Length: 452
Image (cartoon, rainbow, N blue to C red; front, side, top):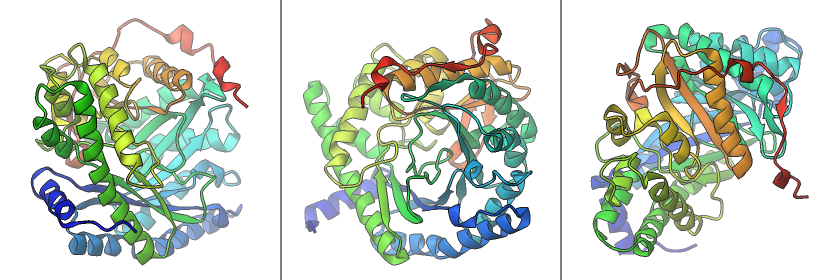
């Protein structure tokens, strides 16, 4: 094992104390396949019992590591097998969501993910039942997060699922209207979803995973921003090298926490996800990193190029610090969770179209974006389809977490609180895509998907 020297320790302490370095999450992934039965009550009991048994010590171990190592661990989370894979024999999947919620509360975690369906090619009846139940599930639980994978590079885009998700996103917003459409903040629509993502709301424990694993998601936009302050006016080669070195240190902290959590919980170590995940706090912003590179404001011309450099350098630096880098890994651009993105959107520098362009080179996609509450379901579906197309053609993960804020119009503000922050409502194109969306069927996979 590589020994950490004194200068590395001091450098890491500086990152924690002054630059907002934290471990954003320890996430325990739990397979639910052993719970399967056609008895609805028994299935829910099995799921509750398994989660509470597996994750019984997760929160306490996280707190112990936080105290002993001195690294803040912001969230403790659980992800489970996509629920549609285990609810095929029961009529009401919402009962499983409520069992998940009870289990999450019993263990003390912040969120539980995996109320999910994988429908990139087609939908089973179980998939459809679960997807249609998402609004009720998210409105009647507190900690449950949901995701649906509607496309992949290998399968194409399931436009029937895209159309359904446009309606589901709208109904979820309406079902949680008292909280500004908060349910939509816990719902992600993916293309090329990864099976080992520790970040909510898109986390689930993929079918290719084992019985249990513990993964860590690190953060640290503030650390990267401070590092770049030391190379003002330097050429981009030096900027990239600086980000790589910083990402290495950030990931080493995550690796240390992940290994320690794995040992203490007696659960296999999954991955370190080294995504730069911002918060609404000042000094913890991806937008601020891009502006430090020389942009007047995030959203100015050049933003996509700056983000491409950042994302690539983060991956290159992080992958040298751990043998098991995975998840999404790169830079997140969630509007409501990043003070710089919020300010840029308020000033009109960030449009939906500019954010879409940025998603071609970032970790995920259109994330935590508030749009007018009267946005038609077909328009929401069309935005999902556009983002899925970027993911499919570029063989990367893309996602949409859109909040059609009930009763809100362009220029209004939606408050979510905590890490979810607040978001200015930004405009969408007023022209209709309804006839396009109602065609249904499947957009075929691109030619380069035929690689085997």
